[in-house]
Length: 229
Image (cartoon, rainbow, N blue to C red; front, side, top):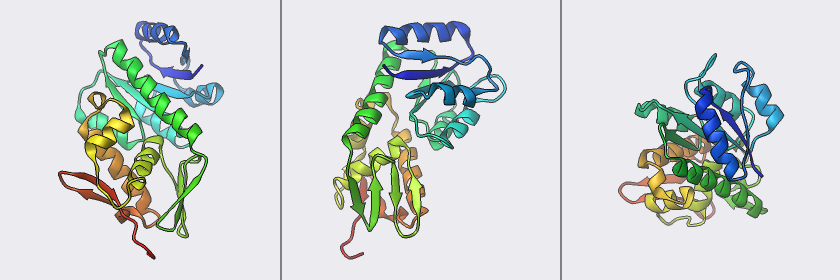
């Protein structure tokens, strides 16, 4: 049974989401004191976090930053706000998806299942280290290390990197990445993929590998590995 932390201050919506998720055997936990979200997060140790943007005390973006400072747990935003910058901001902060209110509960369940399947099945299958451009990629720790240093990646970032490296020096189409990453491309925007790849490139740039992920306009992305580089 997966633990889900639902950070939502609308009592009726919380109750409805909790009821629907429990029908799928998810263990759902809420927040009583919105000034102590991190204390609750540490107590629950959730496998996934659902979080609204508009909350008492501090907004969802604040708590996403706090969670990401300590954990790579999957985060899905729920929001009635429809401004594109909210989606972009959530992805830049490391969220895995953004769900617009009001939403269809079947879509919500599908998104949750896709993220959990991707994150936890993927993590359990990866036991080996990968070498790429003289850097060591640890799929279990979601990290990339070389002589310059080490960077930690989110689940989405490490998955994108893995997909690109598996086809290194070959173009991987955007459609292929979206379909494999989110399982059903209808549930994700083209812009969200761009944000995730740009964030991955920025993180790799901290250890001198940012230019190893190239954009091929109108085609997709390519992970470059030159021999004896």
